[in-house]
Length: 174
Image (cartoon, rainbow, N blue to C red; front, side, top):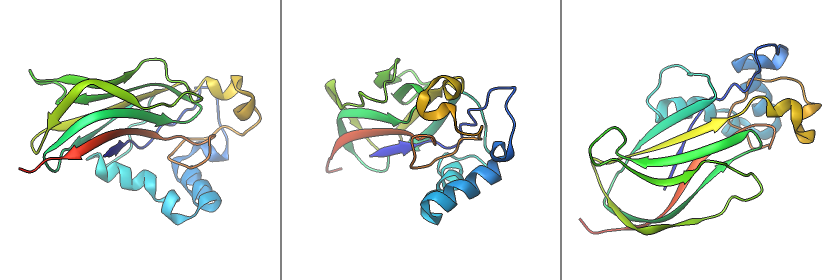
């Protein structure tokens, strides 16, 4: 089971350029990786129940649990601008529980984390993925520092971004 999130503009306030526009950045990702990747940012808006992008350093996406299952482990996947990722079960409710928390995300150490104990979930439950990115890293990381400023959308390159919470589950009979 995976829940994903869309836009992360990752622009410092003083940055500008032709790829700082969302549509231009999506066109660039489409050119580099094909239409199936280029369309992902807009698909995620729909998946996350949003009609328009909400740019910012921290993004969330709620994923409705479709059937009974047990969570055993999980990991977060982001690229070089990723700073933190969290997956919560039923956020904002009395039964809320953090099932995955990586407060200091490390691109070079994306590992599966076993939950302390299995967590039973099912229809009516919500998993929320929250990612925080740092646009300032574009200037400091050698892999990104020479690239033009850009509005960062979902893309397969490490100069693009992702925000995915991937959980290891077992389906249960209802």
